[in-house]
Length: 102
Image (cartoon, rainbow, N blue to C red):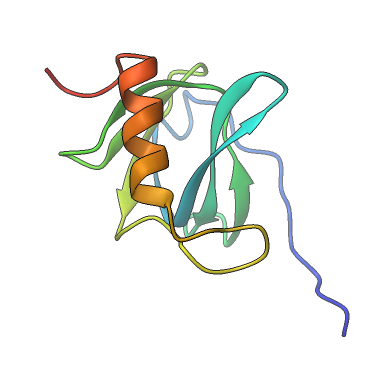
């Protein structure tokens, strides 16, 4: 079975300063932490620029580009390469980078 994913270049931050991210997940890529998820505004999956702020209590993230992401629902726990330890992983990432709300 072939799976085809639509990808698009994100619009400039000035045109889209806020976005939603569904079925999201935090993963490491090229020595940085990024959000991966479905952006309903564009109708495609997205990998963000590196995460600079992750506020799990408000489900809000701010990335290196300055874009703010509202994280919709809980993090994805099913799918290729996903494990059930996502809550522990998020807490570890937030603590390590001091990204959680104090």
